[in-house]
Amino acid sequence: MNGSPAHPRRRTAPRHPDAPPTAPPRRPPATRAVLGAILDHGPVARSAVARLTGLSPASVTGHCGHLLARGLIREAAATSGPRGLGRPHIPLEIDTERHVVAGAHIAVRHTTLSLMDLRGRIVAEDREPHRGTAPDQVLDRLAARLPALVSGHAADRTVLALGVATGHRVDPRTGVIVDHPQLGWRNVPARDVLATATGLPVHVDGHARALARAEQLIGESSSRTSAVLLFVGTVVDAAFATGGLVHLGPHSGAGSVAHLPVGGRDPAPGAERNEGPTPAEGSPERCACGAPDCLQAQVSEPALVRRAARRGLSVPDFPALLERALRGDPVACAVFVDRARRVGRAAALLLDMFDPDVLVVVEPASGRLPECLAALRAEVKRRSWAGEAAATAVVPSSFTGSVLAVAGAAVALGALYADPLGAGAAPPSRFTTADST
Ligand SMILES: [Zn+2]
Image (cartoon, rainbow, N blue to C red; front, side):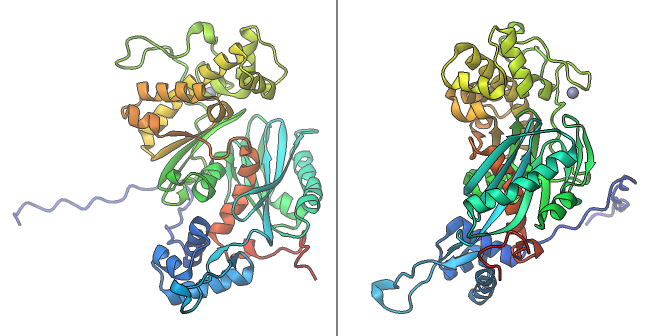
C-alpha cells in the first residue's frame, strides 16, 4: 500500500426532496420461484423444480402443497419411473380449469374486457366503444359488462382478480390513472372504483409495462433476461424489463416516450443519404405539446389515418386502414412501411440507451406484414451503434391480434405470479361459482 492520503469517501448524492422513498429491493419469494418454474416447464417433477429453483426438495414439496391447496397447480397424469420400478413421478402443472383472471384495457375509443387462464391463454374477449369518456361512465360500464362475460365463458371457474391497463401515466402502487391526456383523465382512482363495483381484487398498470410483464411470463423466452417494449397505438409508450421485473420509477413514469423527437430529416451519421421518411410521405404532424417531431404525433393511429388521407386514401378509422394494408392496398402498405421507419428511429434510440436482449414492438403491421418489420429493422440497423445486432434484437409482440385482451389480464396475472399466496390470489367473495357455498 502506498502512503497517499485517503480521499474522503464519496457520499451518496442527496435525494431530490420531492422524490418518494424507494423500497429496498426484495428477493423473490420462494413460492413465486416455484410457481414460475412450473409455468415455464410444466408438467414438471418436484425434483426438477428443486433443481431449477435451487431450493431443497423438502422446501419445494412444502411450497407445492400450498399452491395445490390454492388450486393454482395440479398433479398431471403420473408416469412410472425407469422400467416401471419405484415410485411413480407425479409431475406438476399450472391448473387452468379452476381459475381465471379478468382484464380490462381502456383505450382512447373503446375498452376491451377479457378472461385469461393461469397459463396466459385468452378464454374470452369483448370490445365495446365508449358510450362516453367520463371516468365514471367508462369504469361503471366495464364493471357492468364483466358478469355476463364470466357467466358466458367461465361459469365453472373462479375469477381471482381484475387487471386494468391503459396508456400514459398510471401508478400501480395506488391504482390511480394519474394522467391520460387523450381521455382527459387526471388522478382517476380506478382500482378503488372497480374494486367496489366488482368485489374483486383490482390491479392497475400502464399497458406497456403490462405487456412487458406478459412477454416475460407467457411470451417469447428471449425476453426473459432483459427487454424493452415499445407500444405503438393511439398512445405511444414504452417499458423496460430486466431480471424478472419491469422498471417503474419513483414517479411511475418510466417508459414515457411519446415526445421522443424523431421527426427530423437529417441523414443518419455515415449514411449516404436520408432513406427515412421523405417529405412527400408525410407533412409533419405537430404534437399537442407544440413540438413538430414528437414520436407519438408522427406514428399514432390517428396520424396514420390522416397521412393516408393526404395520399388519397380515405378510410373511416385505423382498423379500416390496417384491413386495407393486409389486403395489399399499395397506399395503405406504403403508409405502414413509412410508420415502421419512423418507429425504427425510436427503436434504435431505445436499443442504444438500454442495450436489451430484445426490443418488442407492439404494432399490428409489424407483426403481420413482413415488409413493415423489414423496414423497421433496416432503420434500426442504419441508426443504432450496434447495427445488425440491434436490428435482429427487434421482434414483434408475442400477442399480435390479442394485444389489448392480454394487456389488461396480464396486470392481474403478473400480480398473481408475483405473490401467489397473497390476498390477491385468494378466491374473492363475488364471481365465485365453482367454489361458492
Ligand atoms: Zn410532443
